[in-house]
Image (cartoon, rainbow, N blue to C red; front, top):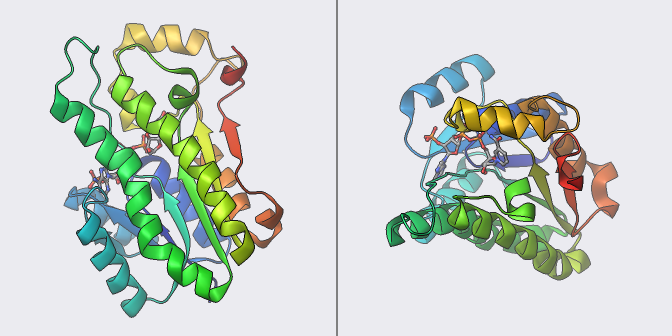
Length: 240
Ligand code: NDP
């Protein structure tokens, strides 16, 4: 059995592709999800990967869920912080709740998972933490002060935790996807999406599997010399 990897928000979209790629590479994989039971059931039926329901924005629930996974499946060696939400709107229209929910889920979730899993990785002298950021955390995006701030925070969190983990054999990296063909992007109005695609040098949306291969590399033994890095997988969009 390979190392155990937990992928938050692993039951659909990019997370599902990450689960599949890690399984293909020999990892034992567990996915988490927030509440979409139907997607979770289809995911487990089709992949054979178990899915655990817990809210990554809830500190105590995340600690308890990771303890449960460790007891039932084994020690967690790889964490992929992929769970993320959007609550878009300009600052003038954004409520405090929309700000707070995105910060607690997208950034707080990374802290909560790291608090749960870093100590065991430290004891075992091996670990991989891979955080899914966003090009919008690198460049900002109109109507997304909450999301851009949380994703930008992920990039800082990654570099700080990488410094703490290095002496224990724990690497911490981020991937900053560009626009990927998932339900999250399907929610973007068509006219806005056309303008976005026009700005992507390769001229298309990315595929979830293209993010997943990057994660699989960072999780691998061969990825052990990469830490504190952000890999931009976005069709070249970060250059503009
Ligand atoms: P989806 O909306 O398709 O899936 C989100 C997943 O996260 C679902 O499994 C969902 O569970 C889970 N989730 C949401 N909130 C929580 C929570 N509080 N606790 C636990 N799980 C939660 O997302 P994508 O695949 O599009 O995106 C995945 C990641 O990639 C996100 O972090 C996103 O910000 C980032 N990203 C995506 C881009 C894109 O173009 N799609 C571009 C750049 C970054 P459930 O199904 O139960 O709701």
